[in-house]
Each structure stands twice: as structure tokens, then as C-alpha cells.
Image 1 (cartoon, helix red, strand yellow):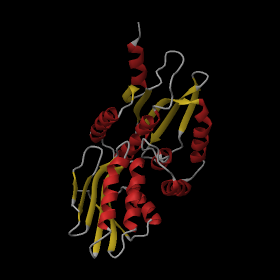
Image 2 (cartoon, one colour):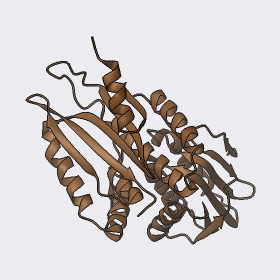
Image 3 (tube, chains in turn green, brown):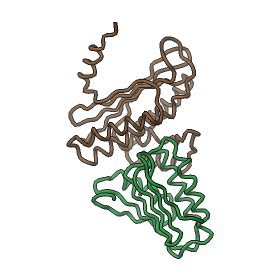
Image 4 (cartoon, chains in turn purple, blue):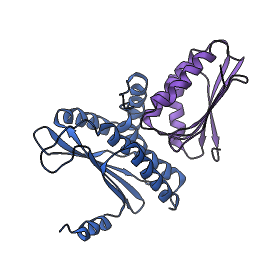
Length: 126
Length: 183
């Protein structure tokens, strides 16, 4: 199983997933018309990771924008993460100060997904 | 001869920032979004309102993209794959306008959905969004039935719409969305 390193484009996010330290990060923007294709490999990767996860798994979501097509896929990513057992998992949901829409979006997922969420306000997303 | 000055004057009077009519492709949306993002960057609006406008714009344009193939053929001068998009700025308010063709058989369903969304308050919209997010299915083109709910939620405004019959099978659907800092 390989680490993931997908570079961002104007419509898709940068994704990194390291099997050695158990950190998954999605950052940038996710606004493709059809996001299924983009997220499918990531979901498969999580499935493989679930077979021998690290003791701690950290998920960092640092999205500036995402569209409703992505919102379903992001939920699928979280649902797949939910199935990974034997690891301490936290989802860090980053949002820029004053971006109430992004905070609320995180809270929507928090209400559905059974993994601890941490809402992290930053001045600007890197 | 087509009076282009007349069209120009109407657009000027209505404070149109950008308009497009034609076939909506993924590449076109990328270009429009790039142009609008750099225009938004040059304004004095708050980052919060810029983000809202950009988000709503993405959903409005992708709605056009996801539904462009539904109508096959039209009577008269219309091209079924054609849609229109305009963006205006009136004072502090941004107005996003789209128009596309829709099968008459789908009009009532869409009308009911929009009326239901317009009848909801903030909290109800949030619950509705979560239930469609968690239980809905996705179309082959990647539409998830969340676009209109998201537009209503982020704009905080009622969705203004109209259906104009164009022939026995089809209508033209117009949607006007206002994004205002003064909510």
C-alpha cells in the first residue's frame, strides 16, 4: 500500500495520506461537477488502511470551498473512516474566522458521523 | 439588424457584471468561475460575502451543467442545450440569474421542491440538508439533489423562480438568487 499525494487543481483539492503516521489531509477546494471519480480512490485507500491502521489516525480537513457534489463524497469518506477500528481517530475541521458556512458544514457532518470532531478556527487556511 | 446597443443598454441599466448564453461545459464553468473570482477579489466586500457569492455561483452554474442534457429538442428558434447565466451587482447585493430548458413533466416536481424550500426557516433547511445528504442518492453526473437547498441556506433568501412554457413538451426555468451582506 502506497502513500497518497494528489496535487490540487482549480476544482479539486490536494490530498495527502501517509500510512506511516496515519495522517489524512484534504485541503484547497473541492468543486468538480462530478466528484465521484475524484473521491473513489481515496475511499479504496481508506479501506486498505483499515486492515492495519496506526494507533492514532488524524484527519485534517482544510477546505476553502466545496460544492454539494463533493459534500456527498466527503460524507462517504467519513463513513468509510468510521469503519476503521483499532485506532484513535480525530477529525480536525478547519475553517477561516467569520466563515460560518464552513463551520456549519462541519457541524452537519459531526451530527451524522460517529468520530470525534474538533472545530479549529484559523485566520487563514494554508 | 440586431440592435446590440439595445442589449448593451439593458445590461448596463441592470448592472450586469458578466453574462453568458450557450452550451454549458465543464471547461466553460472553470473559466467563468476564474473570472468571477478575480472580479470578486477586486471588490471591497468582506471575505465572508465573497465566499458566499462564490459558493452560490458554483451551485447555480453546476445546476445548469447537471440538467443541460435533459431536454432533447425544442420547437422554434431555441437550442435545447443552451442556457443563460447573468450576474449583477445592485449596491451591496449580488444577483445571480440562470435560465435553462426543462421538460414540462419535471416542472411540478421542481416547483414543489422550491416551494418546500422557500417555506422553511434556517433550522428546517439545515435539517433538510442533512437528511438529503445522509439518505439521498447521486445522479450519474454527480448531482446530489442538494444544490437548491444549499443555495437557499447560504444566500439566506427565498429562491425566486419562474417557468415559461416554450412548446408542448418544454418550459424555460428561470432562477434568481440574491446574495446580500444585509441579512
